[in-house]
Length: 160
Image 1 (spheres, rainbow, N blue to C red):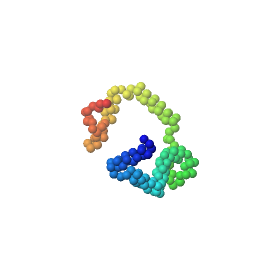
Image 2 (cartoon, helix red, strand yellow):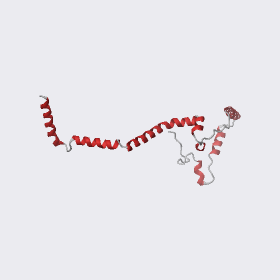
Image 3 (tube, one colour):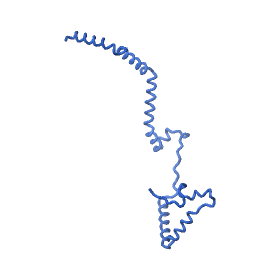
């Protein structure tokens, strides 16, 4: 087949296939291209694109800027106005580590001495438990003494 015969065969095939689709392909492609051009070539598209990009960039930069504000005093004083700065000064601890350690050691030795004197015998521990598990005088406050509001007094607790 020569080139002219091939072109003629293709033209004949195209003419016979036009019955199977409603619109000419050229018109459909031109309409889609015109719709794309109308949508993406105007000022609105670039405005929306710029707004979207700026929101995404600010969303991604927020953690880094927040960390810089939190840890860099010079940056905070330079860029954050004083009326917007709600930071609280860290209070001085009531105890130093040494004082806390000293209190823990003192408590441990006191409990040890009490155990040597016999204050933690099973009878005294049972009496202590009875005193701790007293019911309030008013019936309306009795549920405060329960271990759990849904558990009856005679019901045993099971650990799962």
